[in-house]
Image (cartoon, rainbow, N blue to C red):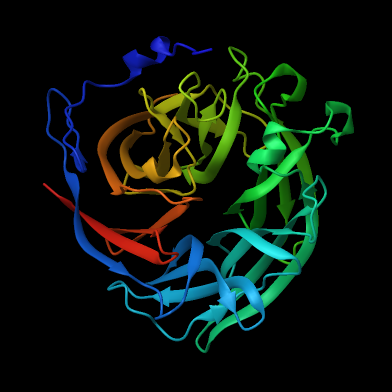
Amino acid sequence: MTISLEKWKPIFPVLTCFWLIVSCSTDDDPNPSLKLVQERDILPDNELAHRPDVVAIDNLLYLAYAAESQSGLGFKLLRLDSDANPSGDSFELYSASGLPTDIRVSQGEDGFWSAFETLDMPPPDACGKHILNAADYTITADGIELAAYETGLASGCPTTPDFMQHPPPANELPTNPKAVDDPTPLYLAGDYYILLRAWSLSNEQYYSSVQHVLRYDQDFNLLSQCLLDLGSVFAWQRFVLSQNSLLRIEEQVFLIAGIQDGPPLPEYNSDIYALALTADLCAPAGQLIPLVQNERYTTRVTASHYADGRLYLNYLVKDTNMNSQNDQGYLAVFEVDHTVVPYKFSLLSEIIFQEQGVQDSHSSFALLDDKVYVFYQGETERILLKVFEWSI
């Protein structure tokens, strides 16, 4: 069933857009656009990798990714300067035991930290085999040091196509089942937060609106946990949260996410929204604010940043014929008016940075020296970079 979202349309200005570098302007005033200034493969020779995730700290980019190492598949880190040149050798990140899958990174107390998923082997794939782990790193004058780590913070149910299409009976699933793939990290006021999505399908038998928020200290001692029930903001339809990002805009924490009513098929929808959360991240603090809404199936917000009054976010446009090669990666930028309630987001620019998808398209970006550095996986398991800057 297709859900009409016509009621949201009056929030948006009339836009004029051009393909590839999508420079958008209102009927009244032209806006600046982002232009491509650099494009390159950033991996060392002969290295194959996937799942890039990046954070900018001081004057360097810290890029995490999954790659083969001497001990097998694991997570690595590459430091890049503002010219995208390597700064020092690559660094092996803590990958725990099992098969490392998804990693997300965030700024931390004295450097950066990672929240990541590992899979207990061997098969079969089942609830309880997907494990959440975390590690904290200190940046020193001599390099990077592993400061703390913890394994088995939580476990979740698979989000693999086979398990999602053929789940076990609902009464065999855990209460308020969770997914630990693509865990969402946030460093806020000295604490380390991880948001885990509900394991949920859009049909009534397997539907859950309950997300999970875990709060830790720097050594990953659990300080608190809560259930973030989004049922009140999804009251008009059973919707499922896709990959998402957390950030603070001025004094307000926002969840930026794709929200879908089913898989990427022609009869279903998925759009990008912003949702204000309470200070403890345990409840909505407003209603859904639509950001990207059209006929496309937009999903997977894996990074968002706020700088100079602008919200930057990435997302994926999924092919509704289930052909991942037709997926496209986008970057969108919004002017933010935080003097009104709810905040107002006005689209400034929208860019296609990845025109052809891969089996598991994942991208990330960071802001450094007034430029936007977008990392994504190429067709041949290489990590590619595109750098954009503003032009009038």
